[in-house]
Image (cartoon, rainbow, N blue to C red; front, side, top):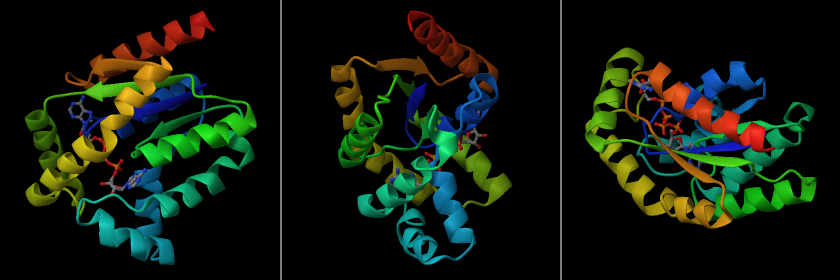
Length: 192
Ligand code: B4P
């Protein structure tokens, strides 16, 4: 299975795809995690990415696409993958579709995690206190929300037209949200 998780910042894409990982036993590819790792290792990519991430802006498509392409060429991604935080722009979505078409493994499902913005801001401010992520401050969170609405939300229409979009309510406890996603994934697996 190849699944894309889409949702505004703080919707719980990372939280839920990590849970799904142990359920489905397919690898998880988080561009946010990969970029934060590059940043913490102070690689050239990490230094460049930090200039965008720390301001709540998207890292340019060519950098993200190179990084994802390198990952997807690894054997562990041959059978399936859960994409978390990727694609985030129409260009990323089209490019992903092209590379998956070349492999003959199209996306199975796009899961939109929808939630009230104020609730999500509250979650991220809570995380700010615990993890001290540079981009979890009120100004940068507002910028990330605006970027989501402008650059990423159009993907919902893109996947809707492809007939693979399902929307779930991302409010509630992590267990409740997981149960909703699991129901969608199970139905898709049953349908083949
Ligand atoms: P991401 O790492 O993708 O971060 P996110 O959208 O903020 O988080 P996510 O939705 O995964 O929320 P999480 O589970 O952590 O991106 C960070 C930055 O990287 C971007 O702004 C951008 O600059 C760059 N980037 C990444 N991918 C890119 C791409 N493809 N192209 C360009 N740039 C890219 O949950 C958030 C918090 O809520 C956590 O504290 C969690 O514990 C809590 N939580 C989760 N579920 C909950 C629930 N049900 N109830 C209560 N709390 C919950």
